[in-house]
Image (cartoon, rainbow, N blue to C red; front, top):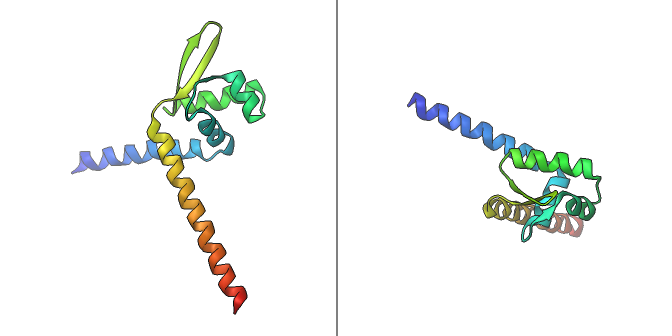
Length: 114
């Protein structure tokens, strides 16, 4: 049982690192932009509205955490989603957020009606 327990702790540590990586709005926007395509760092920087250096920092972190894959094409590096389940997970969390916001609005409306 000790070995299974230590593996679980390691998995939780890795998961926390990925969640920490996803706790940045620019990184979430990058994932959204890349959901159906592959782009260079320059293209990503332009679409997100950040500098090339800043985009490269975000992309490096996301690649290190296993969220993105990269490949060289000529002089540029192109980025894509490493696993489509990352997009599914982000979509599910967004749905949870919208449901939560709808519930808060609904409850707020009931309080105002009283």
